[in-house]
Length: 489
Image (cartoon, rainbow, N blue to C red):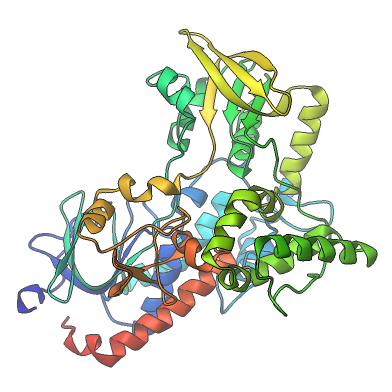
């Protein structure tokens, strides 16, 4: 390993390391909320200059795709006092909103019960501020690049960025999250290259040229689709919006008022998906008898979700994915009151429609897109003509490995494998990546939503922050046992 004991090189103005390469103890791939939370937990404990490096092409750490936005119409779907981003200070984000004046200057964020639903961009600013002292002190290095290649080198890893940086790391954590969506095949085949077919969120800025009366078809009916509706309306769009999904189910609305959780699902835990459904229904009825809404039950499900998921067998987990996943998601990932109010208004006015069905035929012209849709449940075919079609079906995790070159490198070398549910990468109970043969790699970890196949409930900020804290402590113990002794700076 002597050939890898190079010191950190001087950085150029873009934050890149000059050749031949730099060195760190831990390299984190992805600097969104997951990667930044882990970097923060590690760096504050290691306290060593340059020990943690983060590959993230965005200008700030802690934002990622979810919070790196400049559209004030996009809000968090949980109240600010429940956005527990820092495990050691659960109310830090809400206090930051008060101290910076963000809360007072955003009256539209206040719901009827007084709870505050902050702009997503404000949460991104909050996270960036948490990382800034660590960056200024040199405890975290930010390389504004995507990772192009990741290969084994001695006992560690050699990482190559797409802008030319090369870095040797003792340990690596894959913390990327958001992927592009997969358009329905009928759309992808017929509309490829059409300027008004927006197949991923990165293209949505094209809607800035959308005329106020243009009709827009949104493929998808989850929170991503609702974000697009809110964004369009905030920019003055008045025309018809049609949301299309296979189930037609929309996210439910957050409850008003500070309600306690209800129910208990782990004493004993259900052993099957059917038993879980029966237990939830009974808990909802019991909560209603006590004057509590179903949201109280799902708040308990969220808290106990990881234990519930891990108690189910692989077969029962797959049964849940087939039959209950969408029902769970519409109740778990709820819309903020502001979006609920907007949807209710537009549906009353007839300018927003939500349908369940499947596209069976597409015709394209320069100014319009014509679609035949088989409607559920009766199979009638309805024709719609739209000026724009946007895909908002959420990340396509099934194509995760094929989406990035470095993941393909690892898969080709049999060093990683997808989880059996197509939710991300397969890991063990300690977040170590599992090789093709099922054995764990000692110094390659995966963090955040990409580990949902193993752990279950792992999408919200509190759950991700808690996992990052646990993983950081685990990695610190490893480093203190031996890796740290070999680290020169």
